[in-house]
Length: 570
Image 1 (tube, rainbow, N blue to C red):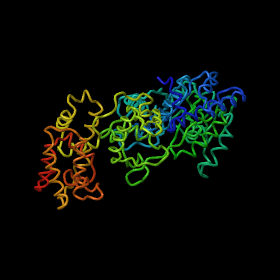
Image 2: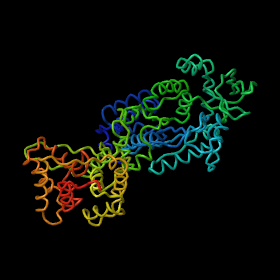
Image 3: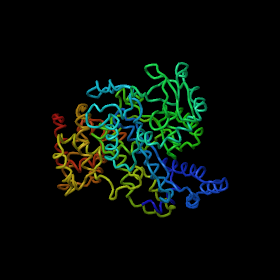
Image 4: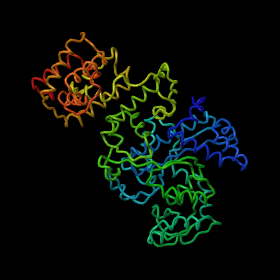
């Protein structure tokens, strides 16, 4: 599927391809055995000779591993989606850059061996969780009574969440990795390097925390809780640590076999080393954590993964979004109004810039996604005589290519924009989809929710968005004398159009002509007047397109009611 794309990928400017080239350079640096091979391969990639560089990586003999992390103390959220979506975009870019010649895997890792620190507010049967505080999440009982543990409940929700969006991934459980022995060799080496790890971590901690800090968190054999206690003795030869249990008794446990859990920054580094992770991104708030984990990864004999730090989202007041505060959007919020593709598009846009994540960004993101989808399938513009031909846009730089992980849909997008659907819903007071589809099917003969699945998603979202945000804030006003004269002129022109006219361009030209002849300067004031008087809002879609889908006769009736002073909100 990705074969033959490397020539486009080499020239691509979008950030996932920049990340893919960084990852390829990392593999060339650390994946080859000799310094001479590494120097040669790096020279090739710097010269844009990706094909030859990929051949130089033939001795790698293993898949390239991408990773995302998930803390299953709560349900998957919009940040979970963003990290998996963005990592998937980099993976698709890497596959295109290398013509899919190097196998890749995406691991979604659940930190389900962490101790439960607090009881979530939105959970029933809180008493069960309160009794199990401090125990690993895969030991904490499931308050919903559906799974053997709370961690497994949330892991199942994570997998269902990712599967619902069609992500290609492999799930790994921290508990399973610790207990199976997969991490044992690295844990034993971490015990050997105890002092060096402490040398990284202790300067980052406050005085009180330093006094009790240990990179190993023993799991009490008596209470089953994950303990934040000092390591009093350690025996690297036997692979054990000694600590004071909750009852004050000195206890010795092995660091292998799931009897300890590492603190999260050393754990992150240990996981990178044990699994051989090549790429993992993280939020800007974790920059210092990444630096510490990188140092520990080197101590453990590994190479930190390639990655970058993305900016965090802000709410409508430009405050950082917080799960505990509940500000900003949830996944459920976005999907009530917009399609998942529009959310992935929003995640693609400028990941290193802070962006507002609130309800008002959904219509814009949706229509921008649709515009990019149309642009991807549009043939290049014919050359203009006397001018040099313009280079065709690089298809792999189109956001839609990344939204769909290199497999964009064929046939273009929706024939109707989201903003137009919103205004159609507003003008028609469409309280259900049947009303809306009555107009749509007249504009697009034969269109049904089954034949137009993307449009069906948009129509459902438009009705929800209209009911929740537009209808409560609609404010109609009477036209001014200038506007009244212009609307009477437009009314006459609409009535003069051929019966059943759906030519959006012809209608738009008439609207333009009226605005110019009646002296609106700038012309956008004329369109603002139409939206405020007829639709009760200050912005709207291309007016000619709105009339074409709503109907010339229906629009004429709307204008007549406005001129008579009728109630357009009914």
